[in-house]
Length: 257
Image 1 (tube, rainbow, N blue to C red):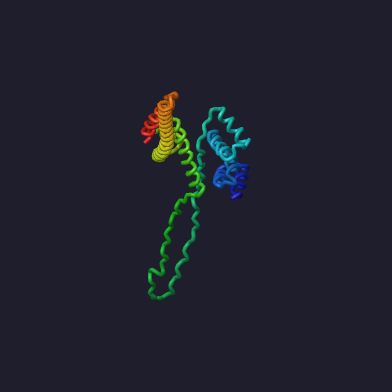
Image 2: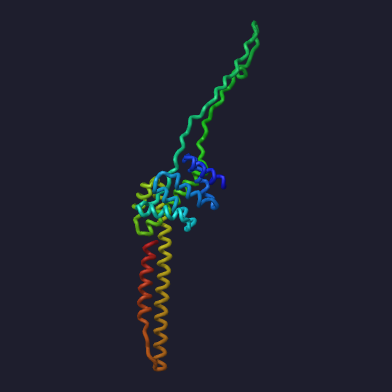
């Protein structure tokens, strides 16, 4: 797998960006070469938004990468937001078909009346089947990474209380089809709602425990004061805060069903 990285770096230095993009994308799928692949890939893409996306991936793998951190800081200071790099479509050449003339059928001898089967004398035409376009592994891996980038953006936007319609428009503006944008936003919305339900569930449990503990301690101090003549304490704060947390957690949990 190191060959992808080495050949990709060589192609990038030679200025062959489509080939470098191809090889470095393959190398980015391998953990051992992913960091350097993303770093070199940032020199191949054409826009600053795409470069920032590559540098963010480098920092996600190794936050201590000085070159990636310095470059990412410069782009962020300019107010640039990361965007998924676009794969440059290679120019396809028309397939060259070699001409193979069929050998001429032997001429019959003079005054020869031999019968020959036409199916044997005539060569059957060979059907030319056009090759089916095959999607290479790096293109499929790139599309998976592209959808993953859409998903991360949708989760971050919905977590910041942006509407699903706004997120769908945002993904479409970044190049996603309406069907993919709708599916990604729906999946991200389900994940965000699930996380919020868990948070409100924890808050509901915490409020319930506070209210119960405050009530139990109040009852115990009342029994102590009644039997031994001590002072009676009512833990209003624990009970009140517990009930507030319980109510907020319950309604928050219902709102995210």
